[in-house]
Amino acid sequence: MRFSFRPVEGVFYELFTRAAFNLVRGTELLNELALPGVDVQSVSERLTEVEHDSDAITHDLYKKINSTFVTPFDREDIYSLGSQLDDVMDHLEAVGNLLYLYGLTQLPALPRELHELVNVLDQQAKLTADAMPRLREMKGLEEYWIECNRLENDGDRAYRMLLVRLFSGEYDALTVLKLKEVADELEAACDAFEHVANTVETIAVKES
Amino acid sequence: MRFSFRPVEGVFYELFTRAAFNLVRGTELLNELALPGVDVQSVSERLTEVEHDSDAITHDLYKKINSTFVTPFDREDIYSLGSQLDDVMDHLEAVGNLLYLYGLTQLPALPRELHELVNVLDQQAKLTADAMPRLREMKGLEEYWIECNRLENDGDRAYRMLLVRLFSGEYDALTVLKLKEVADELEAACDAFEHVANTVETIAVKES
Amino acid sequence: MRFSFRPVEGVFYELFTRAAFNLVRGTELLNELALPGVDVQSVSERLTEVEHDSDAITHDLYKKINSTFVTPFDREDIYSLGSQLDDVMDHLEAVGNLLYLYGLTQLPALPRELHELVNVLDQQAKLTADAMPRLREMKGLEEYWIECNRLENDGDRAYRMLLVRLFSGEYDALTVLKLKEVADELEAACDAFEHVANTVETIAVKES
Image (cartoon, rainbow over all chains, first blue to last red):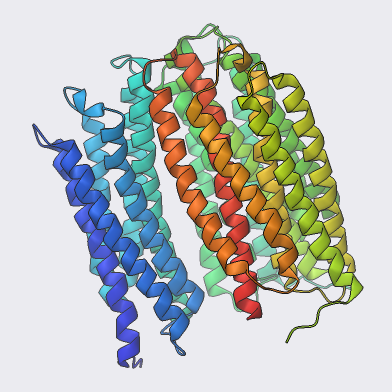
């Protein structure tokens, strides 16, 4: 049996949970891009705010690692998990930022396949936010990492279909290049969620 | 002197060897792309079959790691080697898949430089398949990893020449974009073979 | 207090310092690209010479790691630092090489944003060359890695602005593709400098 109710440990779980909830805020903002008449500049600015908040959480986490004598699991795993949650946010922010910077808002609509990829990210975010509080008890995590990896496969397929659409001849070459940068950030976010899941698996296997 | 004839160990060497032989099957299928009148859809489908077989091998390997008390070398090295062999296969499969998905089969011919890159991969695959059974005795591995790294340099050069060809003005921009995705997968496969060789080097250095 | 004046240790610091000074030679060569009437072929050839010299330094370092019984810090950290300094050089060389190979020398001028990114790299190189000799005393390194990471953020911004310029419609699609390959190498060099700084941080934290 596992007791881990020392207050200092609680801080780590709380920071992971807050970081993961920010990812849900991020993917929900990206979901707004599918709405007709969406204000992309506003989505981009709100993503930047969420990203700043995530940076602050990561910073707190690193300070906590350095100032805590006994950590709930290996210091380097805490560090990895924190920086990987932060990586996801960086990619989500880049999506909004690039859409705005490249003037892609002037397209009549973004490709449907792009929204499908966002949808996969949104499921990964919710799954991750749901799993983080369960790190404390190390319970029910296996289904999380299996499902997160499965979603990453869905994301790969959606990304490939998005490229097929971009290369279909429907868009001019410069627009293809811009949309491909956006697609690459979405795909990197999808991979980054998988890295988070792999780290959770590593931690759980060590603790079992 | 090194004794390692316990049956359970044999399973690991056998799985690595089978995974590496699948890579030879993969590069030989890619070699068919140079044949006149090749049926790309058929190549792509057969690559997918080989990839599924590799997935099954990787899955068996992971189960074996988790159910074996004494492994022939560090668990994490076995895990790395297995997943890196699997990565190579994923890139090989992607090549066939993208050629078919992007409709590149309608080109009169693929660029010669693409076949040269495939040829480097084929040499890497044969070298790797030849080295895997020698893990058991840890003999003659140094020449394998040195040669595999040398081939990776050849591959870099072939990739760069392929890009020069793609950017020569001979192809329209969309075709360049599609062929570049294919070229990137080939180059990633070449790198992935090098990662396998680096892991073998790590294992051999620890054991020596 | 820390004594580390055994001659054998000195060799490691000297090799790191020489590798870092080669990076300064590399970024200064890239700075020449901003000069009117620059001979890009000559810049590319001199970059290749510096790169060969860096390879020799890295090779010496690896030999030294293997032949030294007591190293000044963890063998794997020495190895990482050496290979990461080498990675930076590979990206710097690729920039000159690609500009020449793709015939980009026929453009009236390279985009201003490209020179801004080179300028960030030049600052990172000088900062790194300045920090390497201080590894011996482990003094004043924190300001180095903080500043190097800050410069990497500047580099990200410069890279993004370079892409906005490339996608502005000023260049034809093939030229955009070629310049983007060059931009990606510059950005990879900027990241590679950050990896060097992160490794120095890891070493310093362990030693403190």
